Length: 147
Length: 147
Image 1 (cartoon, each protein chain N blue to C red):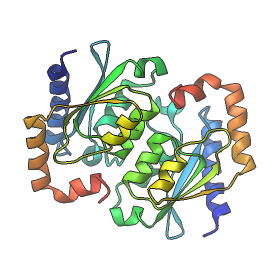
Image 2 (image 1 turned 180 degrees about the vertical axis):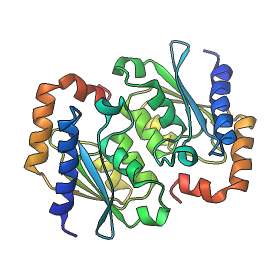
Image 3 (image 1 turned 90 degrees about the vertical axis):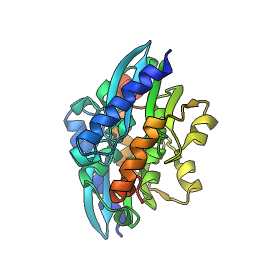
């Protein structure tokens, strides 16, 4: 699996969110080398407190049998918060690829403790997207992480 | 706070979900003695894999400042799964009141380990709702918990 290609798809989602005036975090769910769900944070756009990037990708993938989740990889531009981590654990997704965890460190230790493989790419584009957004809209970012 | 009154509101949501042909789990978010968000599982109705009862209640409450979540109580007819647990932790909701945990035991230990107060009412109506549903639709229930 070409990690950079799928991370780019997640970044494209994050940039779409930014261009809509939203929080620039994107995610794709990949099964057998195909993107089966793509999404981005919808707090601003939909007034949603549950549609983080990963949740939106899962939602857009639709209802799936457990067997599909268990063979999938989820890519996210930012380290997953406790809600998104819980969703990944609920559906048994075995591998999470993270763009960066410098601007926010989520529940990576919980994921690992449950046997989920965690790959951090330390991607500069992902870091710049978040750094720029947090500087410009600290109140939106704090709201998104319950602070 | 009258626990039974708010649990009844969550049960009403669960029954609404059942009457729509959905999975009978309901939830309400309560702040200062008022229901500020009510919801029920939307897997069947909306084709949603993220709108469990608790998530739907949070979503229907809309965007809220962190301070409101931190003074709120969430009522749910069934012990919260890892995703809903993660959402409760993300937003720092300090108290979770659970209808029952006999048909499904969620991440109550994780909640407690993070300082969240967990009250289990062991409610017969909640148990009967789930028991009846699982007997009639085991495949939907398994899908909802990623099994």
